[in-house]
Length: 253
Ligand SMILES: [Zn+2]
Image 1 (cartoon, rainbow, N blue to C red):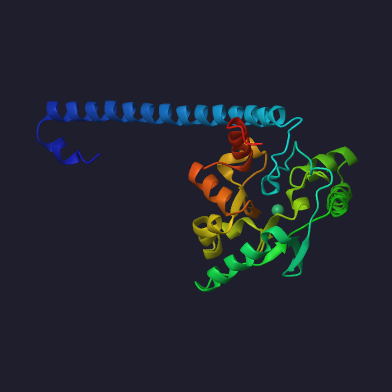
Image 2 (spheres, rainbow, N blue to C red):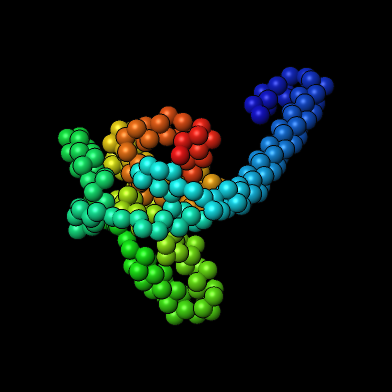
């Protein structure tokens, strides 16, 4: 505490200082403990709140009516791909994406390349059948690892959407580059945070919105919603679930 020099001056003063320092330490540790406890309580409340809000989302989006603008199609854990949804495929980096995003995506890549930033589509359009295959393989792996069929299914569903409930079915979603959480530390990610919306792309699953989307942070998964909506979502700091509800409250159909 830096008070040792004064110990040699006068005894009562030293005793007082020692007592004071002791009391100060007690107070500080109590304060620190109180703060840690408050932080833990806050975290617990947030976790409960997050669970409650995901439950809210499941209620909110049960029987959801899609907006008319196809660029705002919502597909999540509670809302399946609309019947009759059509994808007009275009090939990008050996993957298929919908024609609606093609032009803006290629323009975005050109602009990024001028700053020596590079993207590639690791995963684009995925049919419901393909999703069934992806999920089935993951369940099989879980079973081989010794899980029961149901446990393997639950484990697989933590990271893989049910067939019909993956945004990749729309052709408007892309997984970029190495599809890993390490993407967050790359210049490409920083560039997308800054400029992605200018080309109509948003990071679909952000950590601070996972209580609404029901999906953990995915730095590599981008959704095309068009420039107008992407910029507005960036301005409002809204994820797609929040944004479509916001529009519907304003009477947008
Ligand atoms: Zn994805």
